[in-house]
Every structure is written in C-alpha cells, then in structure tokens.
Image 1 (cartoon, rainbow, N blue to C red):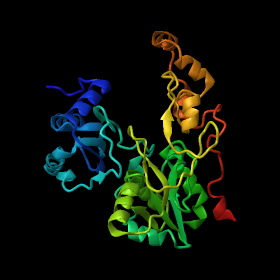
Image 2: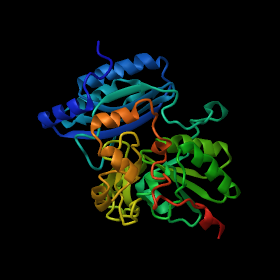
Image 3: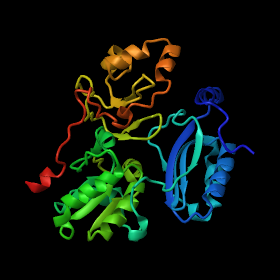
Image 4: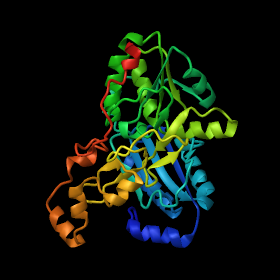
Amino acid sequence: MQLYNNLSAKERAELIEKAGKDRLTISFYKYAKIGNTEIFRNHMFLAWNELEVLGRIYVAHEGINAQLSIPADHFHQFKNHLDTITFLENVRLNIAIEHDNFSFLKLKVKVRDKIVADGLNDNTFDVTNKGIHVDAEKFNKLIEDENTVLVDMRNHYESEIGHFKNAITPDVDTFRESLDIIEEDLKDHKEDKKLVMYCTGGIRCEKASAYYKHKGFKNVYQLDGGIINYVRQVNEKGLENKFIGKNFVFDERRSERISDDVIAQCHQCGSPADLHTNCANEACHLLFIQCDDCKEKMNNCCSSTCMEIHQLPYEEQKALRKGQGNSNDIFKKGRADHLPYKKDLRNIFETLKK
C-alpha cells in the first residue's frame, strides 16, 4: 500500500507534460473535529493518489486545509469523494483564477498540530463564535463606510504585490504577529468601528474573527471565501473590482493577476515589478521580487555572492553546502539586508491617528 510519493518533481512534471491534460488548481478548508488524524490522512492520500491529485494538504484534529491540483476530467470524481465525508459534503471549493498544470508536482498530505500556524491557545476562546461572513457585493459596500477599518490578514510579502484599496496591510512575517498589532492599535475602537478582514481563501480570518470577538470587538466581519472567491463573484456578477495588483498564492504559480496595476517594485533596482522568485543559489533560496532586467543581469540570484556560487559547477556547489544549514535569509522573504529596495517598515495605523 503506497502512502507516499514515489516520483520526483521532475519525473512528475514529465508525466504531466506527456499526459497533455488540463489541470484545475483548487483550495478548500474546513474546521471540524478529526479523531484519528493518521488514519484520515492515509485515507485521503490513497483516494486522491488514484485521482492524480497533487498538492499540499494539512490535516489536524481541528480540520483540514488543502491546496491542490487535479486533472479537469477527474474533478467530478474528486467532488463525489469529498461528499462521502460527512464534514466535507458540499464544502466550498475555491477554484483558481489562473490555472497552471505545474502548480503542484507532488501529493503531500501531512498531519500537523494545526491547519494554520496561528500560535493561539484555542482553549481560551470559542473558535466557533466567528465574525459575520459577507459576499463580494456586501464587502464592497462595507469598505466604503467611513466607520470601517479594513485589515489585510496576510503577511507582508503577500500584500506587497496586491491588496484591496484603502486596506491596512500589517508589515508582519507571520499571521500570529498581526493579531497582537491589530488588537493594540484598534483597542480604542472596539465598539465604534467595523473591523472587516480578508485573506487569500478565508481560513486565516475564520480564526481571527473569533479571536477578536473574544477580545471584545463588537462588529467583526470577514470576506467569505477570501480574495479568490471575491474575484469569482466580481466576474460573475459584474461588480466593481476593488482589489489592486496580484493575489499571492502558495504554489509554483506564485501569484494570480487580478488587476493590471503593478504596485510593488523590484527589490534590486526599484523599478515597477511584482513577480516573486527564489534565488537560484540553492544554499540561499531567498524569496524576493525581481524584474526581468535584474533577473538577466543577476542570473536569477539575489546578490553577487549568490551569483558567483550559482555559476560554480554543481558538484562544487554541493560541496560548499555540505554541513551548512540554510541561511536565515530564506525566512526573510524580501527583507534581506542586501536588497536595497526591500519593503520599508512603517506604522501601518498612522492613518487612524491623524
């Protein structure tokens, strides 16, 4: 019984190319009590491996968080399988705005402590007492209200390339960081302001909205289905799109273009750019924004040092990496000191204090 991948990413990419099938990129989540996570994980892997599902799925006692791709002609079988699981019956599937057959190259179903690393002690508050879910139409009206505070619950490298107009974008590296910052800066507005939140697909706002209600915020709202579902509704209903730039996604696509606006800049030269890339030096692998000119000039590297290493024969690169851990820069995602145009730190709530 095969419970893990037996193909490399390269081998899988070759099979996808040879098959010539269109694939759909899908995400979904569901908070639910799962007793034996290991058995559930193995069941999902076996069923989805048969359907040629690829992706990254987290299973925990609190539920499931899935980002995956599947051959388009297997979609109905996949949906039918989900419907056989009680808590996943009719679960909303966020289908990507832009598809890429190579968005995922392995099927990884992992058991985790939580489906989102939020750093919260769920025993201290009622996680089911969530904020009010609003659709795209209601959301558009809410964010024009002068009593609304619109907050982006994503990390800095996500909002840097795209966000809703007039949104507060916390300059944070983790979801947990943003919770305390927002609570502190809005502590005097728990009753008179409407706290409206959004994220990529909705999962982070599920927990955040319950947390803020527990902290005494009276008017808490969240965008139902996140940015992905918002864009779908805007297109289907002909609504005004209030999102500018690109939506960052956690797969090989890196992002989805929502509007033609380019609101970020190349971290190396400062010219308009919004394409994330990983440094080609495998010992670095820093995620940063790089324009086409710098990509060519720097050979897809983040620094001259990395470029020199990347130009060495592969075996020499391996020898240099041997026994060395990854640089801490890998976690900085565009904040590395050697990037002259990295995102500036700032007081994100300064507009509220004017």
